[in-house]
Each structure stands twice: as C-alpha cells, then as structure tokens.
Image (cartoon, rainbow, N blue to C red; front, side, top):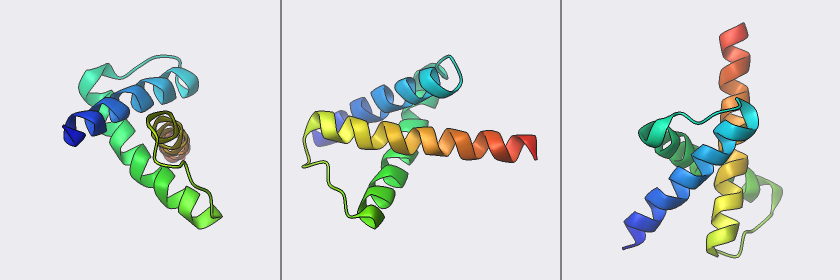
Amino acid sequence: MSFLWFLLVGLVAGWLAGTLVKGGGFGILGNIVIGIIGALLGGFLFNLLGLSSNGGLIGSIVVATIGAIVLLVIVRALKKA
C-alpha cells in the first residue's frame, strides 16, 4: 500500500510542478517520474537545510513538489544552454 501512496505523491507533485513551472502537465507517467525524482531531490535538499516535513502526506507532497520544481528549473536551464 505504501508503494501506491508513493506513486500518488509522485503524480500530484509532478503535476503541481509541471503546472507551476511550465504551465501544463506531462501526462500521467511523466508526472509520476518527475514527482518521484523531485521527491528524492526535495528530500535531499531539505535534509541539507536541516528541515523536516514530519512525514505526513501534505508534507511529503510539498517536499516532492519543491524538489520537482527545482528539477524542472535545472532541466530548463540546461536545455537553453
């Protein structure tokens, strides 16, 4: 069941990041991939800053969304270079 929640958080985070950064989503699979990578990146960044999301669903979505936004900004910057 936790794997299903992991995918759901990835989907929501990827969709939110795609909406905020690009103006649209990337499809279900793309949103999940961006959200999962963003969750890993967000968790790493929050750990570096000494911050915690307290492990709740909303906190996990926030961390994953922030990580996904950072990921999309980096990808966009590399595309322009």
